[in-house]
Structure formats: structure tokens, C-alpha cells
Length: 325
Image (cartoon, rainbow, N blue to C red):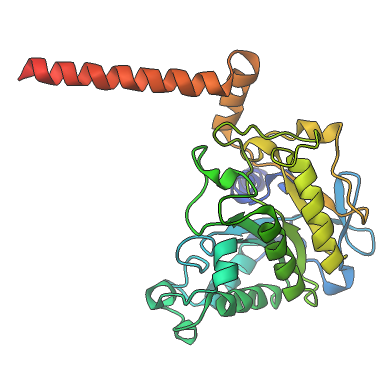
């Protein structure tokens, strides 16, 4: 395989792995240990800001987020994944070796508010964390990442600790029973204040993959407090910037992060300019179903038809089984 082909395959792989796919470009990557490396932004270039479609450092140089999406702390374990297998520092060293320059860290509002004790088996290879709580290990994780010169994007993944993301889950909204909008914003502000003095905590990702739920169809820019995600993101973003005016505000697209078209006509405008970063998640299957729902038949009709078809199949199977016996 030629060097050029290897480079292209590396870029493709990174595009798949990046937590925030809109920044997955191969420009700006340089050879290094473990392959191509993204630019490790020095502290002197902080804080970051935006200009048009670009993220820039203090000196005006373009910054591209090549991020690992570190799962786990939003789940029922309340801790980042892998600490039962490897020491924290070993995992972070591996992220550096692979050439990434940032980590998207996701948490649940429940863990942030309740601060549970993490089970020993979930941090088995890290004895220093045995008996520790969510916030202690989360702090140590942020510190381990940023001390290596990697940027951190803090993401509010879900409210109730557990797996996401399915269209049947109410976590597609920014408010759920027991966790109203005010609690969501308070949680974001608390996370912001906690790392205000750490220049490598560069952004707050307000919410992961908002989507329709039940009879609630999300909108963008119509002013409805129950459906208008852009308006909710504006309220939350301004609250975060009041706590730390230097962080970037990441706003996810509608429909599991796949539909950002409305932002063209109704951009999110915050009290402090040059802070908004739009986030899109690129799933091939969503592109297919999105094309079908936009051009042929609505999502509601697809779900109804699928339900009827499954019911028909179930009845047919019962009839066949009874007839066979």
C-alpha cells in the first residue's frame, strides 16, 4: 500500500471514529508516532473562538477537533469506560499516541447531581479510585486528559444514567420527568464553573442527539418552549457563557444530530459572539431513512406501517405454529 493510500485510509478511519464528524478533515494532520497526528493546540492559543465556519485559536490559526468520544460516564456505571481494563493514564497515553487532539467526555445529569460511589469492578485496574465517587473520577479523568495537552469537550449525554439513543426514549428531549429544563441548565453551568480555570476544557456540548419523542416533534426557531431546540440551546448557551465566556457552545442538529438545515435561516445567536459550533452526526442509515421520510412518506407513517407489518408477521407465525402442531 502506498503512503498516499495509507493516508487516505487513515483519514477515512478517523472520520468514522471522530465524535464530532463535521470536523473530520485530513488537512492539518502531520506524521508522528502512531501515524498522522492532529495539531495539539498549545495553551497560548486558548481560548478558542469561531469565525464563519472555522474554529480558530487566539492567534487566528485554524483549529480542527480530532476527537475521541469516550463513552461510559453517562451510563449506569457513572465512570468512563475501560478503567476496569487499563489504568487511566495508559488509556490517555494511547489517545495521544494515536494522534487525536481532543476528547469528548459525556456525562449524565443524574450522576452529576447524585454523585454516586463507583463500583470497584468498574475501576478494577485503578486502585486509587476504589471507593471514589463520580465527581472524583471525572475530575481525575479531565485532569489526565488536559495535562497531556488534549482538549476536552464536556457533553451532557442523557439525564437518567443509562444507554442512549433510541427513538422510543424521552432522552431525545432536553427535559424529562424529574429533570426539567432548569435542572439541565443548572447542571451545564455547574460543569462549566468546575473547569473554568482549565483552558483545555474548550467547549460545552449542550445535549446529545435531540430527536422527536412520542407526539412531540422538535422544531427550530418557532419559539415553542416545548419543541424549539434552537431556543432551548440559546437559553442554555447564554447561561454557560455567563459562567465562562471563553468556552465554545456546541449545538447538535435535530433528528439524532442529522438535520442542520434550519440553522441556515435561523442560526443560534448568543450574547457573546463567535462561540457557536454546530454538530452533526453522520449515520448512513439515517441518510437513507431521512431521504425516504422527506421525499416519500413521513416517519410517523413508517413507524405505523412497521408496527402493522410486525403484528401481521406475529399472527402469521402463530397460525403456522398452531397448524404445524
